[in-house]
Image (cartoon, rainbow, N blue to C red):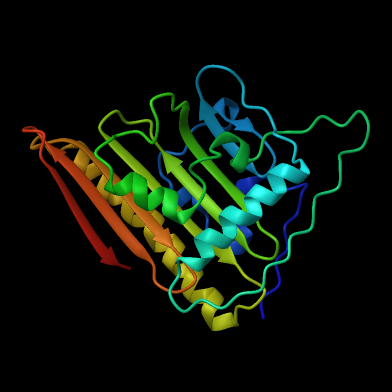
Amino acid sequence: MVDIGWDLDRSVVGNLNEQLGADLRKIIEDMPDEKDLVEGDRVIYLYRGEEFRRMDETPKNIAKFREDLIRALDEVPGLRYSLEITPPSPPPPGYVTKARTIDIIPKFSWPNDHLRYARSPNLLPSEDWRVYWLLGVIFLSEDADMFYLDFRNPKVKTVVSGRFYSPYDSFEEYEKRRKSIISSIEQVQRLKKEYISNQAIKWAKLVFIVTHDKSKAVISTMNLKGEMKIEEREI
């Protein structure tokens, strides 16, 4: 079993470097300058428009989250799970809460969201999309997911999401998933350059999803005639 050691005094990049055993600043060659990034709660991002604010949980929100999570887990063939959600403690008086990944991209935080986006004919997840670049984590009841998004280029959009921690992982399972996440980030960096220079396409979406069992890459392209092509493969 692998233990997580998330240091709240360390940056998001520093924590993920520790978890993944890699230097994300070297892997993500075009990472934005830190002075341009907004730091939230375990997330850093670039955005336009109004500032994102933390959405405090209510009993109703927690119940809906539980229902949505159960629905998503039930879609995984053969998955057996036990779900227990502990409501978060309220912040102390006077404490300024910061936006989390789930506050910034509330309808784009789960693997099924990413698959729907990759297979859709729309270049953006929604008409009012305001996030250019994001690197963050989502802590679940026991597991932890990471999310890397780069929508800065008008032609090519990239998404990498993956579970980087589970208390049930053996060291071998943890290593396999860690390497898969790193490889996925490296691949989207390389593919992005190729598709940006490809004059035969109007746009491309490169979506890599690392799950607990089968990880998948979905590459969607739209040619100049308005014809969409979707390539899916396991990674």
